Length: 551
Image (cartoon, rainbow, N blue to C red):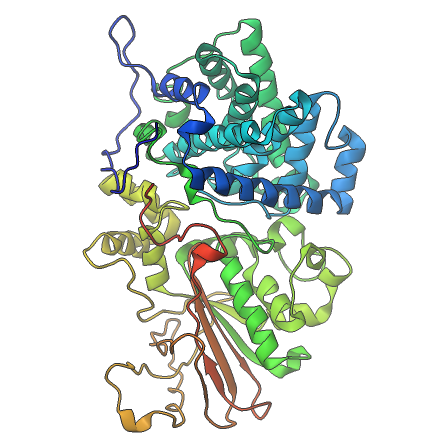
C-alpha cells in the first residue's frame, strides 16, 4: 500500500558524514535500508502515474539509444563491443548504456541523468529473462529511486549531471538485481562493492574526445562485476555512504545522507523526470524552442538578416556555457562541448528551423553561416530564473534547501555571492513564481551589454497607449554591466504590430534553469511583432520544475 503525502517533507539539516555505530540495536545504515526497500518493491506498491511516467522514460531512452546507434561513433561502439542485444545480458547492458548517453538526449531527474543505466540495464536483463512489461517498469523504477537518492545525497559536490558517474554504478546494480529477484543482503553487498571505487571523469576527455561514449558504459561494466561478486559471496561495506572514509566524504562538499532514505514509498524521484526534445545541455531546450518559433515568425535566410540574439537564462546555464566555450572555437568543434554551447544550438535552430543530432556532425556542423549567426548570440543572466531554479527540485534546488546554511560554500563555487543571495531570496515567502525582475548582462565573449525597451507594467501603464507603438529603446550605457527591465509578457497568443523600426519577438518559456530568448532582425525586414507565450512545462518536458516535489 502506497501512502500519498501531499506536503513537502521537512528537510533535515545537513552535516558532515559520520560513521554509523555497529553492533546489536545499532541503526540500520542508509544503504542497507534502501537495498531492503528496493528488493521488496512490487508493482502494486507504485502509484499508477509513476508507472505511466516510467513507460514514457523507457520510450524516450529507446529513442536516444537508436539515435546514438545511427551515428558514426555509435557504429564504432557496436563494431567494438557487439550489438545492443546479445546472448550475454552483461554485454547488452554496456552497449545499450553507451549508445544512449553520448548525445545528451537522455532525460533528467532529481537527481541525475538516470536512464543511461536505470533503463539500459533492466532492458537488457528483461529481454534476456523474458520478463513482461510490468516487471520491466518496476525494475526501472527501483533503479531510478536508488540511483536518484544516492545521487541526491552527493548533489552538492564537485560532480553533477553527466560527470556524476556514480549514478550509473547504483542504477545499473539496482536494475539488474531487481530483474533477477535478488535478496536484500545481496543488494547491500553489490551496492557496497559497486561504490567501493567510484570513477572520477576528466572534463577534457568527456567534452572533447571519443571517450565520452564510455561515460555510462564504464560504470555499468563495474556494476555488472559488483553484482557477480556479490552473487559469489563477496561482501560490501553497508556503511560505505556515511562513513568518514566513505563515499559521501569524498564525493560531496555538503553530504546529505538523509536523502537516501527519506520518504521511501512516499516520495517518488521518478516523478521528477523530464524528457529532452533536443540534444543539448542545461537550460538549452527552452531557448531552442524559442528559436524555432522565431524562425517560423521571422524566416531569416542568412546571418546578415540578424542584428542580435539575446538569451536570458539562469546562472546554471551560464556556468555550462563558460565550460563549453573553452572547447568550442568554430567549425570542427567537438560534439561533447557543442551540445552544451548555447550560441551554436540557438543560432542553428533560429537560422535553419530545426535542431537534430546531424547538426553536431559534419558537414552541417562546419557551415560558416551557423558560426556567423552564433557570434551574434549573447547570454544574459536573469536573476529571477536563477531564483526559480532554486525553488525547483532539479537539478539541485531540493538539495540546497535541504542543506540550508551549509550550502553557502558550494553556492559560492557555482555562482559567487550572487548565487548565495538568490538562493536565500528564493526561500522568502512569495518567492515562488516571481518571474523576470531586472536581468543583468555580464562581460565575456557571449555576454556583451545590451539596450532594451524600458519596463512598462501592463497593470499600471496608460490605457491610452494600448495598440500604439512601444516606447523607443533606451540608450546604451557604458560599463561592463547594465541593468534593464524587460517588457512583461502579453497574454498567451496575443500579438502587437507597431511599425517597421525592427522586428522583435520574445517568447518566455521556463525550462531546466529557465530560459527566455529575444531575437531582433535588421531594420526594414518586416513589421514589428511582439509575442509572449508562457508554455506549461508539464505537458512537454515532464513534471513542472518550479513546483514543490510532491507525490
